[in-house]
Length: 636
Image 1: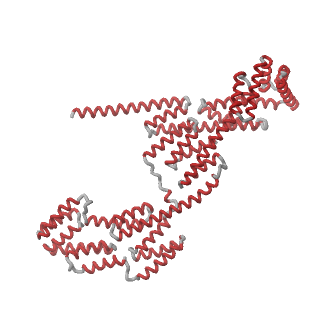
Image 2: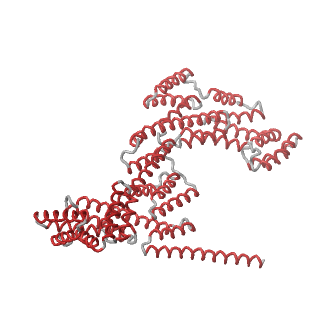
Image 3: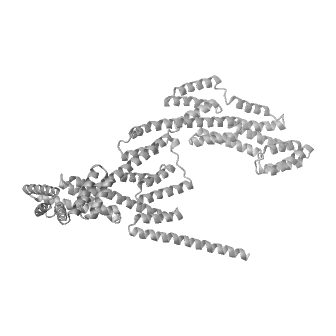
């Protein structure tokens, strides 16, 4: 005993130690992530927090932190893109409208500041900072030129043209003088400063200058042939020899912009094609909402991509056709199951009836007819189960151990001992048919008055069943009495009533069979004509028949068919809430946060793939949808 207690205590100690280590591990990772976040190393912070989620997938605190950083990064990315866009617009306006140029420059600076505050270490921001600084000099130069009189501006451009011509002819001493003249007019002219520097270099080291010019010419030739990578290599060689070469720097900037645009365009094409293919697959699989989302994502990248607009228009028609088809299938299933239920109920196959009506109600939850007949079948089955304890019952062995000797004692003529067995059974199951039958037999032999009281009770139960139109059950009660005492007063009349009602399916003396058939034909004529008004008229006829004769199977089935048709909504089958399994929820978390991880490292394409995996499991996952849209905005 002591040994067991020690093991138990040891287990508790291990449990708490392991828990503390686990907690310590998470706390350590979280602290590391927080440090990265404070240093504005966002992607590293997310990577650390994802480690915590791999240990503790349901950690909501960490999930919120990752979401927050993701939102921050997205704000930074959008601001960075806006800053870049406004800078490009400003460059286009520099020669045409300096006022618009300055407005766009201010917008660029404003967005740059937002992005810089979020992630100052972003290398793209660092590059943009340099570009903005250079462009600020260009604006100041342009403003300085504008301050010159018309005559001086004319003189400036003449001098600039002459200086360049002298440089081309190799007359560097003369060119140097002209560059100086330009700087007298515009002291901050970057072009003149660079020209003067190159002229001085040519005078000092002709061979070095010639090598630089040879590389520049080669770079320009390659640039003009759109061989951008080779051209960039040439201009980089220039900067190795002449670190301050403005022309090489400007060409490299131009090439970077062109290559970046090409890279983005290629990414747009790849992404659009992936969404296009996904849209087609979802369309084929009848996933219309997801397909629509895919095609809209394509159009967010390219306004006129292939036949996307036509396919989007066709979705409404295809969806309607599919929904009508599904509705038709559903109505057929409802009708088939309801019909099976009614037939089973009439045949006394109550378990089959319960199953069929249960399926009917799963397909059509508001089907009141199915509800009513399901209860009838359940009540009937309950009655039978109370009357008969079969081999499936947990009480079978107990009851059988009383039935066998009870019958034996009765056959021997030991009615008192036999009756004791049957009374024991009836204490457990008051409506047990075998026990009731033999108790009646015993009472008939031992005490006719007791028999009369018991028989009257059973007859009264049968009459109540007759009143509720449960003819089959009523008949079984009357037949039990007939079996024991064939001459019981009035029993033949009661059996005849129950049998007649059951056979005639509820026809009454006031309504003829011909009247019912006439009504049925009118109902069918309206039904075949179709349309909501005609269906309503048909339903009126069938309801009349069922009110007169509740067991008229044909009318009952058609009545249910029409009621279902009028009730079941076209889209009901699509509106069921998606019930996700724990495994699916876990996969959604994994793919969702892996998408954020890819996004934090600027791998938008892989991020979108992960979020698409989320939507493949749960097509209504709004966060995944929104994140994809955010990515597409950045790609565009």
